Image (cartoon, rainbow, N blue to C red; front, side, top):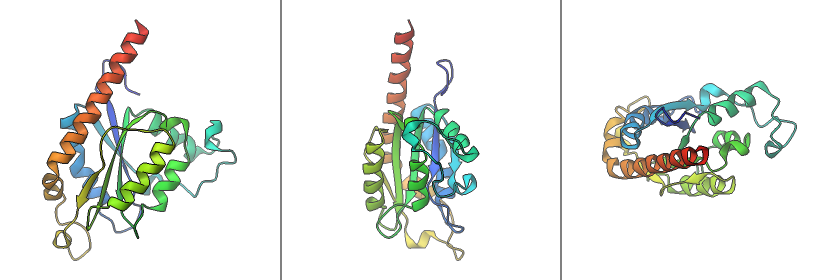
Length: 200
């Protein structure tokens, strides 16, 4: 986690690992808006680059005894963040298996960590966001605002099924994104003040 003299660090977790996807484009466009509205630094974690295998730890994550190098690296990424934003598409009415797998690798790292869910799809990805919210609440994340749901118009895609420009999509949901980011920033400032008071 960042120190009291630094800006808080928010990490956006790209939940899609498909070879052809738009999550990386949306994350890149979302990051500066989150940073400005929350007063934080923002970094992106790409689960496609992390390439976690299906959960292969011999012990339950709640036991806090991870052994695999990829688990240790993933745990460190989450621990060093002050907040996380889960960016998830909607696949067949739910969120991707790769994202569920990444969540399941950890347990204590998620405890009380301020977070947001941003879903996306042709109709905003509300079902995937709702399912993910249920899981994240169960593992103890601190979801500070309602889910943000990004609607992707069919004409926003190019012939390669990538977005021609993610910027207008983020801009069209600017009010909801900024409100959620401001709530996240407020929670982070509150936690920092509590930490200072506890150490006084």
